[in-house]
Every structure is written in structure tokens, then in C-alpha cells.
Image 1 (cartoon, rainbow, N blue to C red):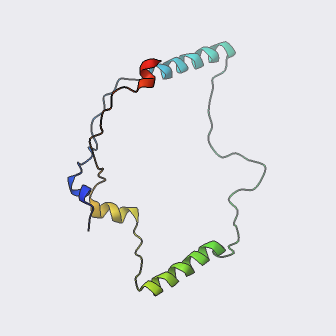
Image 2: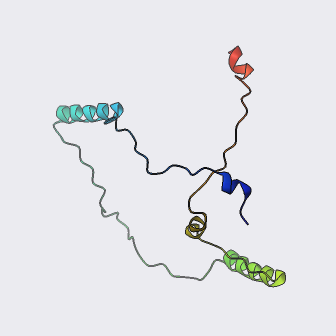
Length: 123
């Protein structure tokens, strides 16, 4: 069974064209400031996001002590409830839900217009 709003909801447009207004003015101003600072200092700024020696080991193996006790308790509780209720919960991935629905759809309703708030008008 699907919710009533599902059938009436419009499809949200996707992959539409967006106007290209060029590089943002703030980005251009920042680039200009960097060039000016580099000229004054006689040094070109560079960024290096590669791995460097941190002075301590990384990417080392961590021993596995098994599932966290809270996870184990949750799994046991779920199994007990499913057995008691005679029903098994089927957890689905987001992809499975999206495949069933086809696309994300949202309910749209008219929002009442109560006019401009009196606090806004008085300030």
C-alpha cells in the first residue's frame, strides 16, 4: 500500500540547465589579492594536500573484539520480537526504496498567506 500523496505528488525536475554567469566576483577579488601578495612577498603560494610524515604511525591494524555489546543486545531483542510477533522485519537499502518509488517525490500543499506579520510592520 502506498500513501495517497504519492500518486498526486509532482515529479521534481532533475538535470536541468543552469545559467553560467562566469566566475564569482568574490573569487576574482580573492585571486587578485593572492597575486598581489605573492608579488609583494616574491613567493608563489602553493598547496600540498598529499600525505606527509605525521611523526606517528597511521593505517595500522586494529584488533577486532567482536560486536559492541549494545549491537548484540539489539540483534537479540529484534530476533525475540520477530519470533514473538511471527513477523520478520525486512530492512531495505535506500536504493531498493528508490527503485520501488522510481524517483523522489514530495507532497505539495498550498500554504495559507496570512499577510505580513504585525511585528514586521511596526519595526
